[in-house]
Amino acid sequence: MCFRLLILLILVGLLLSACGVNATPDVTATPLATDTPIPTPVFTSTPTVPLAILVLPADMDANLSNLYQTTVYDLAQASGMRFQVRNNLTEADLEPGLKIVIALPPDPGVTALAAAAPDVQFLAINISDVGAGGNVSALGGNSQSDISAFLAGYTAAMLTDDYRVGMLMPKDNNDAVRSFNAYTNGRKFYCGLCRPYFYLPWDFPQFLEIGADQNVDDYDAFADILILQYKVRAIFIHPEIYTQDLVDYIGTTGTYMIGTISPEQQPAGWIMTIQPDTIKAIQTAWPQLLAGQGGITIQSPLGLSDIDTSILSPGKQQLVQETLDELQAGRIKP
Image 1 (cartoon, rainbow, N blue to C red):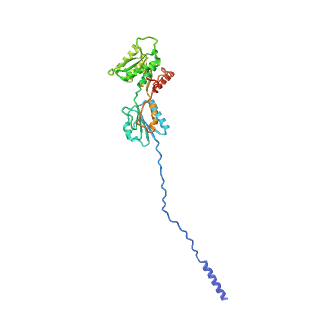
Image 2 (image 1 turned 120 degrees about the vertical axis):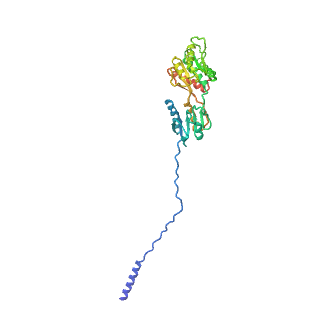
Image 3 (image 1 turned 120 degrees about the horizontal axis):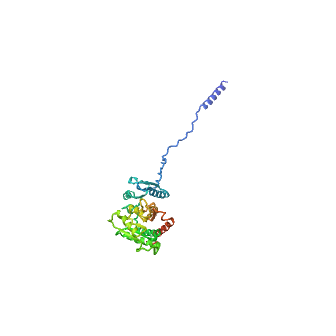
């Protein structure tokens, strides 16, 4: 009995000791940190939109200013460029995105600005002493006086009874002589032999030369000689003779006039002005400026402005424009 109890106690003890054994937990290795760098973010700048600047005088006629602004704005928009209008320009305004500058007189300092910004293309419009070269392009001088005079003679003959046309011109001036010859040819181009209905003892066109020493207040007297003595009914006024007072006076006589300088106030009888069309010149030059091609002399085509449609009707204006187109294309020799 005692032996069995002893055996039972031994078995119970063995079972209790077995239940008290702690299991050893599995060990999981933690990975070590590596030396692989974290990528650095790359920042990209937004490309600058190219800029075109138009420099206009603050006192320019509002209608003409709007015409220039609209022209350059449309060109800039079509080329995907920004557009600004300024009354002056300094080196501080030459921002990195600037690509094209079109400047009208007074000169904002085109030569110095162009030297400071060699990657910018400049176009100088009628700015004296600024010629083409480097990154500066310039509107060429009006060397088309013979075309203007021929067209004036053609138009004056079209509108005048008996083709009685004349010219006021500076004395001892070679350009004026060439202009008079072209004016005569323009009259003949329109009317051929130009036989008048009423005979006069002199031929047309008539002309009067005015000396450089002549007082401008006396120009009216020369006009009177053409109008009263020689019965001229249309006068072409050479630009070196033009004054606003002169054309205002002629306007009171019922005589027609054609010139190459726009009147500040258009007088009665002013048929039209024949002068370089700078708007067309800008449009013509734009592709070259956009392509970075500088140093170009641009010949401005001639255009008609200040047209009095009560004198030069739309149909006759079309004939005049067609003749001008033929002259500029070289198919008519003035």
